[in-house]
Length: 454
Image 1 (cartoon, rainbow, N blue to C red):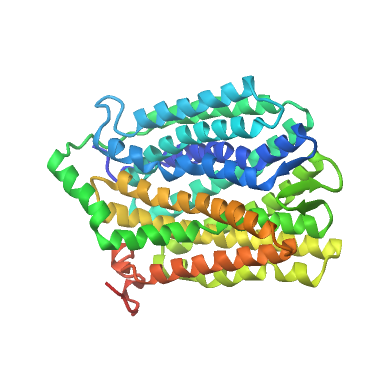
Image 2 (cartoon, rainbow, N blue to C red):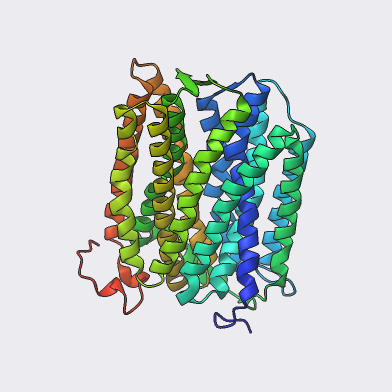
């Protein structure tokens, strides 16, 4: 029988490889698709169409809870409860990378096809990720959970940043982007089959009555909705701020110009735009890696205090990001400050993500031991939907509305920052009323005095 005490070191390596390739699957659409579209459509693309594509492409990560309940209740006596779902959906997502490599138009319909491919590849990986999350919660000891999640999230972000950008830059320079799609599909198949090497706990039979009672509790318990909304609001700002901060930096130094919603390259070619994006994303990725590792270590000592520190830093940092570019438009200072801000944002976003993810995992294991994959996948779905809705509300709706005004691009960005910091403050207030007894160590900060509202 497999228990939390029976955890082999190579399990972490399998999880890490899965998340590394998952980083490719998430990073290539985010980082490479816009540049590749610009390459095919004459060195320009529509910001709002890209934001809309991002919303639909990330939507599967918001509905992944659909598979959670099936993953918790059904499985295979021979292959385990989690592996069949990981392998099936992982290979389904890989199929669409191969199809994308075979056919992709070079006219304006590319937005539609890219959206379809983005959605399908994310659907496969997102549903497989639900099962891998459940497997991690099944077998990882509590005292190691934050470090394991910190390490796997670090690999995810390495895949998104270093993998997608470095390989994307190379394959774009060689004009063989379809080969990148094929490579990603092959790697997805491999990491979807590797979890077969992990010994899963035996299947536990759950009666329909027990399942129905727990499922009803998921949606009717007031404390759950505090956590759901906290998770949604915590993730709202990350993607949209990181994206638009890059636009602010590049417009300040004259690399791009933004008129209405159309982004055009002012200096250089599409490969140069990818180069600048690579620098910024690697900067943010460096901060993300550091933030993930540091947060994981601190969270395994004091969950609550680690998360609170993230909020104290993140909320004012969002508002501060516009200030340097209002004061100067000189090339070198703008680049240096921009890179520093990207590192800082990556660090604090990862700090908040890992501390919050660990807390959500603890609550899932404590409150719903028989439905922890379902509960955790619902929480992650709220996190992902927060990111998607942030891109849609901020990047498409708000920006499209502001584009018809006479405001400058920097003024529009400041309004966007104000919205994001306000949403983040709501998340902070909700976090404060979540009882730390649900997730904290007995000797940790659960003894800390605070006011809780029920």
